[in-house]
Image 1 (cartoon, one colour):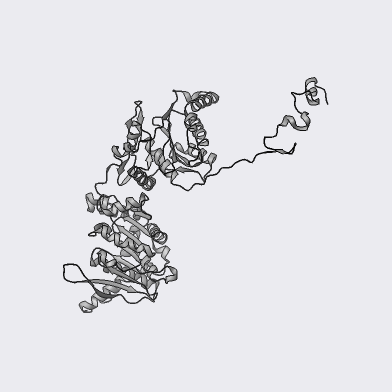
Image 2 (tube, rainbow, N blue to C red):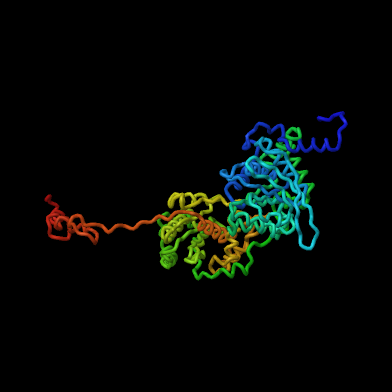
Length: 556
């Protein structure tokens, strides 16, 4: 301690603490920024560099605001030609503002010696019907001419300003909708908005904003980091480094258990990014049935027991006949002017293997023309069905196959057949569901999706649940189909895959053949008839010399 045994005044102590808060920890001095930040913190800064709107749901106390301070300094310290701009920070109380400016001062001293001292200023915040209120704000000015300013948590504090807005712990602000509306106006002239918070309920505007971005209703990016993810990235190791403790896996496990025990029932929301009251059915029956407007059929192929033991030629013949009788007529009905996609959820025995084609109508509605469901169909015959159908989809532009577990074989051979640019092998995971299910839900809400009117499909979609904040089909979810057999949300998963495929950027490849030229006769038009070449010499049906040779066996 610098003041051990020396009497100091209150002002001296406050100055000492302020300087300590505005200094980079000694263990990190001299390191480059990429070596200082954890992976999730780097992901956040990458997102803010490439998106005007970024929303981040995070665990408590994992250092995101600390990392954002570096982003703020790099932004305000840059020249206008380098996309520099003012940074406007809004927390919900004065202590948050002071802490953020202290963090920025730390980064400024580490990055840019040209920055000035942290100062304070007062401004008048006129409220209608109330006396003027002095609202204290803090700022750091840079040689670039820009500054970092901590403002009051009121929408009017952003009026007339321009820059990079940081709304910290947004879910806990008073009047968050109006605050966000005021912040979004700054995007018009090239500003940026970062909304960062821990969750505060499933119906909170913060959670609704996240769902809008994930559903594609607002352009932007979502960066999520849970407490366990931060631990895996080295959070507790950083804590040990700063506190002078020795790290070990056992100490980290004990630390994790203790934190979760202290938070009790609130741990899911505070640490795991799961908004409270966030469990239940994801799609209401009325919502699903309102979109069940496509008139197509469900084509079901069920192979008898022991079918996989039949000779290959017999299995292929059986499935070929089924395809010609059932699938071919539906393929001929497809509009050849529309782009087509598909999603495939694999199952071998027990559940249904579902193949869901999807076309984009001229009004941009996605429509399911028919669905193929397979039970007890061997790998090779599922490949046969997928290849046959996909080859005949008009303007086929992309597909996604379930590559989880046993589905990896079919997904891989389909990718090899149609190309990696059009086929994606999807390992279904919570992260995948979290990215794509909100978009599917938005399609149901907006009525931009038309599915078949089928009771089994409605039940499959009803199997999607919010599990710890992630919309997905639970592993233990089961329902009985109209055939009395088990289902596991099979159509729901295949539909989500098809929807995701239709939102991709796969290129369409096609060609139109040139009318062949009859080089022997010099004419154009019809294809060259081999039998007419050389005056019919090679026509075995004529009386020419070759015909005589073939009939008599003699050389010509």
